[in-house]
Length: 397
Image: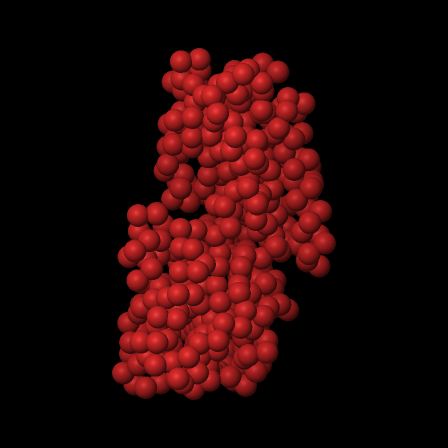
């Protein structure tokens, strides 16, 4: 195929051969293939120092991760045919997992298409391109999605902060069709409305669905506090599972209004209350009032976005868990999560234990939580394994 070659330095092919898909700029033999000779997103053949092709990918000379491998070998071009095949393979897993078409359809590297996320909301697909290579392939992505799914509409939600590392602008745009003003999500027998363009990420956090499913034994008849609630997914699921009272807290006025609307939509308005507040301030106020809940759910945004933020972020998770425990009744349940890739799972649990000992409490970790199976982990790519959490029982010492 007529793609230019990107040559690697001697020995720099080992990680790719082990299964990873990224090439860093310092691994390229720039004497043989100067990065300045490539346009952002341009297809290429990745070749080792012995002139053996590894496969087809794309380049961005302006990024630290300067290339991504999309297909091993030279049998397939980087085109809509390859994308169609990858989407069909990804769809096969999701249709085994879920009875209804509401899920993450394609999860980047783990589904063989680095830089591309596809979320399905019934007849609407929300796509997100995080690399110049996928940005350049947008027409092929749209054609592949249309061929496989025939959805009513595809919306590009290209506003992820990581796009700045690729030199890409942030925007939302319609790929094809006419997307509704609000997306519809069905989960656990409930129906939620999500903002198609102004919401967080691609509109919904499908990655926590399996963890929300595990609440049932702990919330019947309980008083539940759902912090960082966004659209009320945790809280409304708890109410539907039989919680007596649920308080959902979010700092966004738009989110609080959406929670109230979703509660009414599902006939749960009498047991679900939404409040706008900073999470740390709200939990401190509960402590001062000595107000307690049977179940406290902590699902914050990432506190550790970069490796150098680990020390500060680790302290923030510990502080949050300590405040959460202070809002718990005796023999309460704490659900604590982190979506920070750079926050190792053992450190999250260590922070929970430190918080418990500071308060003279005892913790039993009942369940480890991880991302749902429509976000599969690639064993060779640790970066695909980002969501971790624990469902804990908190007792007096």
